[in-house]
Length: 357
Image (cartoon, rainbow, N blue to C red; front, side, top):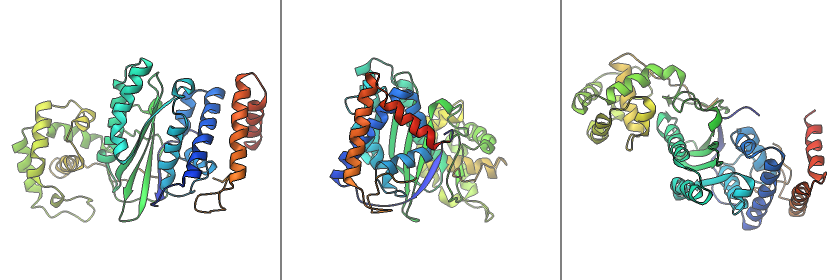
């Protein structure tokens, strides 16, 4: 499963009932334990970074097959399921929905202190991946959910989700740290989604010149740059443009431009990492780059399951609690037997191999 990228889902509200969430947590624990035992903690990260595998995982756990809530509930169940077993399984899960997402750096640091590893690189990856999908990629989806999965050996994956109330859709972004060669140049290895729209994509390969000019502009004195931005407000832009000078209030971004001038960022990644550099600042710099200096960014949208136990909303059928409980017991017994050298988990693997023929 080599793909990582983006999935777009209908925006659903509500939450999983307690009886289902508890079962999801237990089954998630057994599946993740089996994956770590059969393969490695890094394989778990690779699978979570694949939107197709993740969707199938949510279906196996019995959640809505196409709901935005699949993201938040499945990751919440996985985090709860392995709580206290992180050191044994070899992966750690930080973050979550809403205010919990903002606690991610602190959770990573706490794990680092408890398990004796340096968390700074992981904290940086967590913060910058969120900044990329919320600021460098402006596709109309505001992030409200961020989960960072990682190992002590600095391997990591990100699953985060944004919301667009206008079209009632949610978009999920997947990252795999091992495949990220550059945070600001095509960091999503592949993008998987049917629905596209006009987007400012400053991490596209085609945006390289726009990134370079944006950095040069950020290093200039803010007053000179603001004069150029104000001149754009008086231009009549062609319909093909997805942003206009009217989108930018020079007075409100002056403080941020002062910070970028003081920092003198050496590249776009450093610029993006500066506190306060948000979507409006990036829009302003990209617009000046295009209209004054002739370096247009990309406006291409980066977005390009069956059930085992039923689904929470009754599709394709209500969750079968009896079968669900039996699956948990079988998986738990198989994992425990595998630790003793038993053949049960190998039988599960042979069954999986059979269905992949």
